[in-house]
Amino acid sequence: MSWMKKSALLASITSVALVGAACGNNEEGGAAEGEGLSGKVVMDGSSTVFPIMEAVAEEYSAEQPEVEVTVGVSGTGGGFKRFVTGETDFSNASREIKEEEAAEAEKNGVEFTQLSVALDGLSLVVNPANDWAQDITIEELNKMWTDTSVKTWKDVRSDWPDEEISFFAPGKDSGTYDFFDEKVLDETDIRQDAQLSEDDNVLVTGVAGTEGAIGFFGFAYYLENQDTLRALNVEGVEPTHDTINDLSYPLSREIYTYVNNASLKDKEQVADFARFMNENAADLSEEVGYVKMEQARYDENMKMIDEIAGE
Image (cartoon, rainbow, N blue to C red; front, top):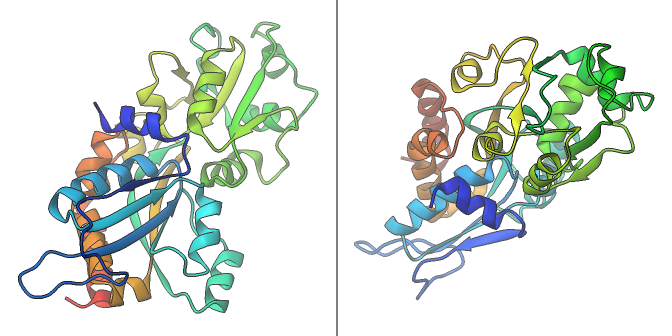
């Protein structure tokens, strides 16, 4: 079973604990000389980043079976709410941390480091029965997602049919929503009749089951469901690995994980997991449908990890 198919089965739950033989674990972790690591690694956040971290955690559990890695999927905003209070070691995010979230972390004495994990392209998807819309502009997307007078596809472009539009979007705790808000909505309120969900699979089901529907989520979820969905070109550019990698696709973006510096410095298993994640993120990102970054970016990550955790 592919990583993405497994993640599709798990995305409806709030977290998945990937646990090896946890005998003798202690809260802080660490190990005597010659022994494997033990303890916990706690991670929460973006459903977009979740498939990568799920894959990383499963691979890691084979190497360090006594380390318990828990990967939550409460959305970027939900993950940061836990992270800024020091509750989690890592916070996965499909956007950069907001000023107010960083301020709350500082207030609570939580210092952190941003690690770039991979590249993604936010994908606009329609039902396969939609044979009229092939390409769409940012201006048209803004109009249809913010102007409640737009009821049908004909209202967006005159040569499109008088087919009612149904709207499906990530919830407002999602970093994907924040990215769409910045790049498309221009920080205008999304239309009230849009159906919002933190679960990307709910969005897939909604668009796949409604002929006039449109929705959006990360590139990997589109690839996993392209037999039931069709992606639109945006400003004439198709979302592909190549166009996301060279950033020519207008809705390309980086996705991240944030690590608590104290955890990285004081918990040996957290530092070990961070290094393992960074060493394997490129290949595993590609495996689950995202786009790996240039090696130099992962080298930058490792330098930061080593500086904080100590080599």
